[in-house]
Image 1 (cartoon, helix red, strand yellow):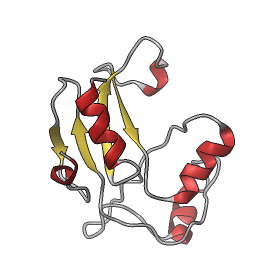
Image 2 (cartoon, helix red, strand yellow):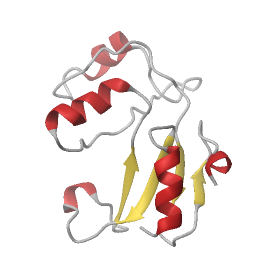
Image 3 (cartoon, one colour):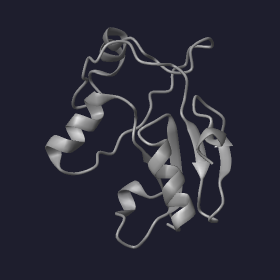
Length: 126
């Protein structure tokens, strides 16, 4: 990661951004896409950050896309548990979440390219 990109990421995270980078050979195939990229997300939420801190390693996760036409992401912990209890190892009830997606920023070219507009405004950090 070049210095300019690093400085912006350091200011923007933790926050509502997912930054996409080229995956090195050190990234397990399990977490890199066919494009050989990896997304980094550090949410402004203490629960996942404390889990990572306790484990001493990053965690692999995904957002729960909802089939609902109104809500894109499920945020009610009880409904999430009811729907996914047989598909996941654990559901942590941290209260209702935010249903606005993160802003996805592609950094693979050394420049910032917004892939998905979301909650974060990258211009504030440039």
